[in-house]
Every structure is written in structure tokens, then in C-alpha cells.
Image (cartoon, rainbow, N blue to C red; front, side, top):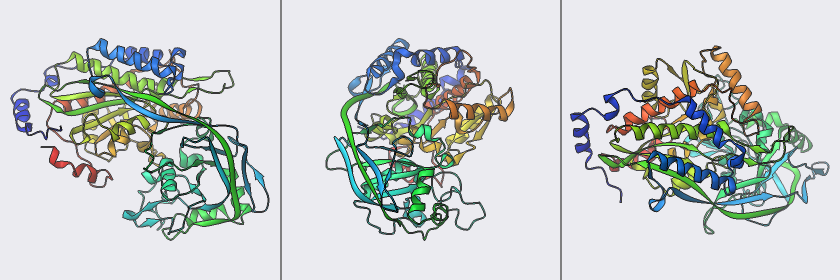
Length: 557
């Protein structure tokens, strides 16, 4: 039962009578060597790339539990255990028997992984689409609160919807009258591929294809095809909403040629799709056909959770989180490497959470409960944190904040810390104050058009109204002490182009984690003060998550 914190007055008096334990002495700091050692272990070949459901998961979960026990933390999962079950549907598409577009002047056989990339989240043995009409739906946005509807009542049942990536403001110049309903170049949730597939499913489409453009997607085609036809999804009840039968991406040149064959100008339609009066466009007589075998299974993956119970208000909590999973074993790269170890994404984030747990355990017990969460299946669509959000162990209404780390910088000390999603909630100010205590500054994500705020596990909690902070170094080049922002930009560009979701994301003895350690210290500082206060961070007036939080206001006193 959720206690509505009627004891908040008692908590306030206790805290006012004596300073929080964390304020009594300068807290210990995060150790770069410990960060490195943890990431080295988790990214080693023995963990097989930490894919959900396989032997790599068993080893990872057991290792995490062993570390948490050794630190003296309490189990924080279901029924007094260390884990929360996260059942997942695992599907793998095979070699297509048929994958083609007919009509529009000629038959066109498509090559999976080159011209098109398709998969399915449904637990079926076969995906079959026979000569389905193709309909271009622009950005595929239905946003009544913004006065926007790309669908205009067009029936998508039995059809394949073709979407643009990102949202309608992405390519509009600031002075264009069509811009502005979607926050300028800063991506909204309507720009995410997950939203587009969900919208296609809600409208009964037989399939959904997004035209891949590197700028709008924020990653190259190599990232699109990295899962190699493998997908994971939450287990959906038979009588509930289902995933779209076939989902995927069209390589940009393929899409341009498809539109040309249908007598349409792709670039002109992109411009038209930035207007609220856009209407869906049928791609002439083009028809999409697919016959693809699918193998599927139900796997039981796990989130790992630990806690330090609060000494005054145990039913209030602060959560630190990272995801333990990576991409597992795939096809050999040019050097013959098959394991995608996820050293930075996100073994290093896991290391940060473990360091914070170590520091909290060595300090006096906090007033509020502190939870340490390690999510599964982030790389498969935030599925572990999504499972938790649907079945929370610690109610979102009384969670003061979720502080998440996903990719830390490995290039040394910096004069600032990059904050993804700046401007969303009052925790921004807490982070800025913590940075000032370090003699540093906070720099907002320099590429909000990439939508990184919607691509990490904190988002699952934000959708439940929990205020969040996300540290993700690839949101923009940090201002490095050695080399400045130009050097930081080079580090981001090199990592995202060469190593993100690839075998190259491996631990290196050459990492300089002094900057990462200071970033983790910032989150520890914010969380420590929040865990020893009566404060309830708030969403800003323009945030889409404020209304969700406001509905539970009576549970926070």
C-alpha cells in the first residue's frame, strides 16, 4: 500500500533539526579506476555481449547480484528478491521467400539489409503480405493538442504505410511559417520510430516502413541493420493492442526511386508533409509483397534492483539507473569479431550506478529510500524499463527522481557536463548547482533534433510522471580540458560513427575516465541531496509529462 507521506511534516522537522548526513562531511568521490575495472569485466568476451535471454544474461545478472550483495545492499526486486521478471517475445526473421514491390512501372525485388530492412515483433511463424497498397503518410503524426493530423481519416487497414523519419519541424528553417508546432529542430516523441510503428498498429496497417535519412534518424544505415532481423518485445495480452505485423526501414535512395516510379517527387512531398494540411498520398499502383519465415520464442529476462531503505521516509525514493544489456553476438565484422560488447553503451553506465551505490552504502543511511536499477533490453526498445513502468515496485507517484546514465565520455576531464533533455524539469537546476560546486557548467544537448531524450530508459519513467535527469555524453561534444569542444565533438563523432552498437564498443586501457567520474559524481551529488530532503522536483510548464505528474499530486505531501 502506498503511504501518502502524511509523515512528511515529521521528516521535515527531523531534517531541519539536523543537517543531512551527506552535508556533515565532504563525500567520497567516484573512482575512475573502479569505473574502468567494472566496464572491463562486463565487456569481456565471457559475457558474450550481454544479450537478453541467453547465457550472457545469466552471467551478467549473477555478477551484478554478487557485487550488490558484497556491498551490503538490500534486494530491491519482486517478492524480496534481487530481480524483476521481464518476459519478452523474441523473434528472428529468416531469409525472405519474397520481398518485392510490384506495379509502378516494373517488378522490383528488394534486398534485405541493402535496400530495405524489415522485422516483426509478433510471435508468428510467418509474415505474409500480398500486394498491399503503399501509402505515404508524411511524418505520420496524430497530435490533436498541436492541431496536427497527417492521416486525415485515411483507412490504413491492409496497407503499408510509408513514413518520414523525425517530425514536421525537423527540416523547416526557423523563419518558415510552417515551423513551430513541434518545438523547432528539437525532436518530440512524434519523431521517434517507436511512435510511428505504434501509430501504424493502432490504425490497422499491414506494415510500416520509415524512410531512413541519417540526419533525421541521427544514426547511419549500419545502425538500422545492426539487429540483423532480431527483435524483442514485451509480452502483449491477446485481447490488447498488438504490434504492427511488419515493420522496418527503406534506404533513402530506394525510397526516392520508389516515389519516382510512382510518378511522385520525394523531395517535394517532404516539403508538403511539413504543413498541417498535408494529406496521405497513394504511391500510384505500387504494391508491396512479402513472405518471410519467422522463428520466435518466449524468454524470461530480468531487471536487477537493489536498495538502501530510507531511515525516515522509506516509501519515498530516488532511483539511479543504467541498462545492463548490449547487442550480444552477431555476424563477423571485417576483423572477424562477433561479440558486440557494449563497453560504453552501457557497461560504463552500470559501473557508474555501482560506484554511486558504493558511496551511498559507505555514508549514513539516507532519509528516503535509494533504489539502484539495472535494466534489461534497453537496446531492444527500452523494454526492461517499460516492463518496470507497467509493473512498478516503487510507485512513480512517490519517486522523487530518476537519474540515468547511458554512455559516458572516455576522453578525460571536461569543463562542462552535457545534459540531454534540458528544460524539462526542475532537476536541471539541481544539476547546475552540483556542477557549480565542481567549478563546471551544464551544457544542453547540442543536437536535440536527434531525440536522445526519448531513446534511453529514463523515458519509461518520465511517461509515468517521474522527473528525470539523463547523462548521455553523445548529446554533444563536451568542452574537454585538453582540446576544448572541438576535441569533444571529434570524440562524439568517432564513437557514434565507428563504435556505437558495433564490435568496436570495447573496453580500452587508453580510456581516460576522469571526466566520466566527475559526471557520475554530479548525479551522486544531486541524488544525495534529494534523498536527504523533502523536495519534490517538478516538470516545467511546457513539458508533456507535467499533466501525468499533476494527477498524482495528492500522494505527495
